[in-house]
Image (cartoon, rainbow, N blue to C red; front, side, top):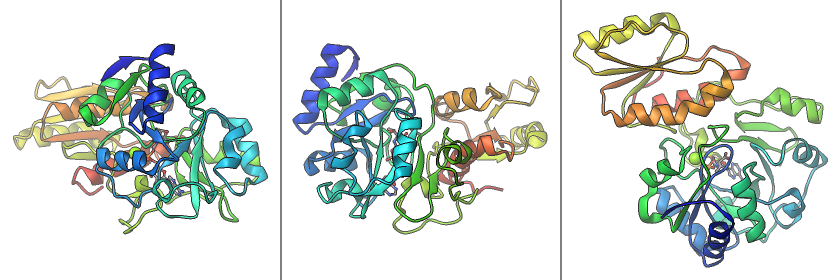
Length: 334
Ligand code: TXA
Ligand code: MG
């Protein structure tokens, strides 16, 4: 049931969480599919609704950093500094888990992922619930993350007791994941908070993931690290800016129905091509990306060409998501 978020519906959502039901909630990154993180039966419903493999760990969302000691057995100074700097916000910290955190949440690993989301509805829900909720992105496994409440309904339908509508997500791509459970901090998933942002707070650069997903590890620590992820059903290919028009026209000449998502190129004004203009700044591009991919995917065309992001540090998170979307859609990156 899709319902507008207000104090009354947020209280009802907290009651549903206490009763072991699933609630979809807005966050600043993407919509999350929330369940009581201390209730393994409720957490099992997340995996069933998403069709997600059971050994993929979930992020625990807290109302504030004061709740950390209940979930993490050791809280390094760097974690506290980062929490002070970026929470509430799009940064997930991987810490050594408290033994009380259910295996269903951690995928049986000795660590737990934690963040405090920066969205008034999520924060109100977490405060009303006064504990941690496990919440992956509210999409079917491997598919495009939802950035509106309507996307959640498209993805999960009746599998969710309540979808709280808090408007479109401000950031639009998933949180940065930083592993602080080992001696060297390591970014497991790039996001809007960059390695440089983190280094400014902790005084050292975290290790970074390699730019392109190389392989599908059997049991990934981060399912977003699978080579195929965030994918539309329509084959998607990344194309360098200067080749975009030529490739689109060539595909049309082969009889393919083609859409293009581009931020620099001029629309060739050819009626055979569905041309979707994207914003050219990172913040705007990220904000719109998943809604635009979802819209182009819904047209049922043969091919989506996306202008390849520049090889630039600020665009790392976008390159990461688009690379996986290309692989997930069945086309290997060129
Ligand atoms: O922005 C976000 O992080 C969104 C919103 C809803 O908060 N959530 C999200 O969750 O993207 P999900 O489950 O779609 O992606 C979380 C990633 C998964 O790839 C998971 O493997 C990884 O976080 N993760 C969770 N706990 C982990 C752990 N203990 N160690 C390593 N990776 C972990
Ligand atoms: Mg996800």
